[in-house]
Image (cartoon, rainbow, N blue to C red; front, top):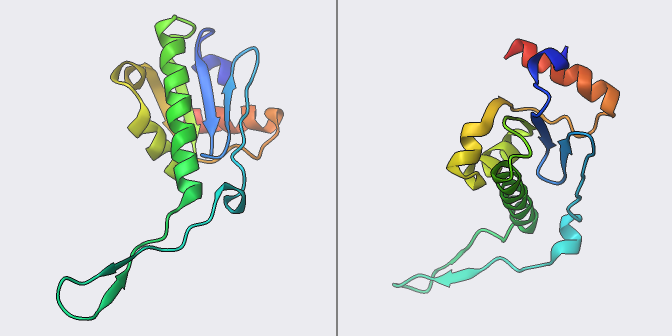
Length: 141
């Protein structure tokens, strides 16, 4: 069971980059609005230094920027909670792209507190199914 693998003071973060749930006695979820609500931007253009040619630039991905900001915010909040000794170990279950963004945003101290990483999106499960799925994932790890 999950209780056998996760100690009393440990926290579990479940995220997909669009929302994050920190599991302890109380939880917290945040949502990122759809891309259409975040803004619009025409792809950039550039002129070649020689000749009449033009090249297009990759369009701005507002959704990815919002996910990266959320992961940076989650990492900062977790680092502060770790400094305040609210937890001693952390299990991270995240969609692979969100896990990468979260890793980038983690401080060295927070990275050391991570005892398990599960590269899977569990955010659409209810809490009962989530507990079972996390237990199975931790047993397999």
